[in-house]
Structures are given as C-alpha cells and as structure tokens.
Length: 151
DNA sequence: GCCAACGTTGGC
DNA sequence: GCCAACGTTGGC
Image 1 (spheres, chains in turn brown, red, orange):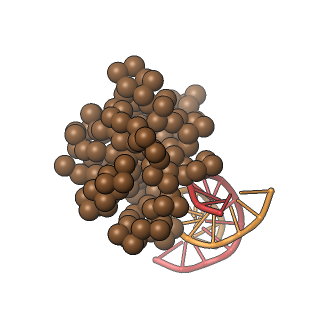
Image 2: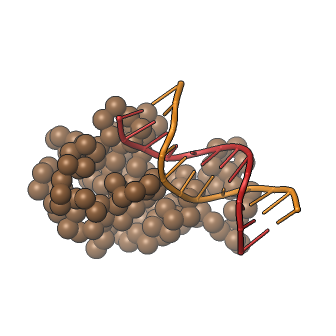
Image 3: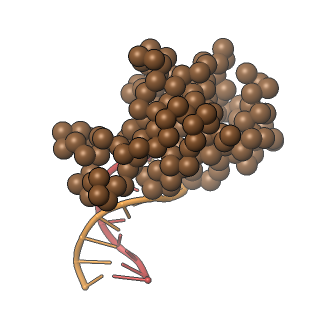
C-alpha cells in the first residue's frame, strides 16, 4: 500500500464537502498537470491519502481519504461546457484521468504546514520540497507514520 | 530544440 | 495583492 497527498482549496472543495457526498465519495477530477496525473495513475485501490487544504488561512493536512477506484478517464476533459475541457483529450488519445476518493477521517486538529516545516523528521517531505506545487504527490511511509503520531 | 512570454499555484 | 517557482505554449 502506498501513501499520497492531495491538495484542495477548501473554498472549492473541503474535506467536509467530501464527507457530505453521497457514499462519502468523490471523483477527483481536474488534475491537469502531467506529473500530478502520473501520480494519480499510480494510485492503487486501498492507498491512503492525506487531504490537504491549500490557499486558505491555515494551510494544513486536515484528514484522510482512501482510493476506492483506480484511475479512469476524466469525463470533465471531454465536456466543452466544463472549465476542465481539453480539446486534445479523447477516448482514443486520453490525457487526463480521475480516481474516486472516499472520506475516511477528519483530524481532531489539523496538521498545519507551519508545524510540518518545523519538524526535522519531515524536512524531506514532498509537500515542502522546493517549488513543489503538485496537487497530487507521494508521501513516504516514514513521513506518513510520523504525522500520524501527532494526530 | 531553444527560449521568451505567459499562465498557474500557493504561501505569505 | 504580491511574487517566486514553476509548467506550458508557440515562434523561430
């Protein structure tokens, strides 16, 4: 099993929104960066995913989701009415994918970015590696477990 | 293939 | 709102 982190702006889609979805599950669409897309494609059913709130007052990991459906074609990329529409994406030549994520837990206290930056044990975490703005990134098991001791 | 211009992300 | 650090686009 592998560990991941996905970012979302809580104003657009928060972990509370995920929890409120039917079956507590949401199609994770809109990834339009190749590296993030490749990470998405590597996700396996049962993988655990940190849910990170970005571009907000207190950027933080706020809980955990689980991969319940592995990657499939992103329907929003084929929809001209959708903001994620990409004319170069097609079923014959697919570019973009989604996975289905299911809510697992919300942390009693968010694990804030500022705290993460203070931890020597987390100095190599992908989240704060130089210039990493990926919306989907892998998390080392060591980093995952270290953070979980803090929850 | 190079690289300038432009767009996006996301912390602060 | 600012701006650094990217990624992408497109002319050449």
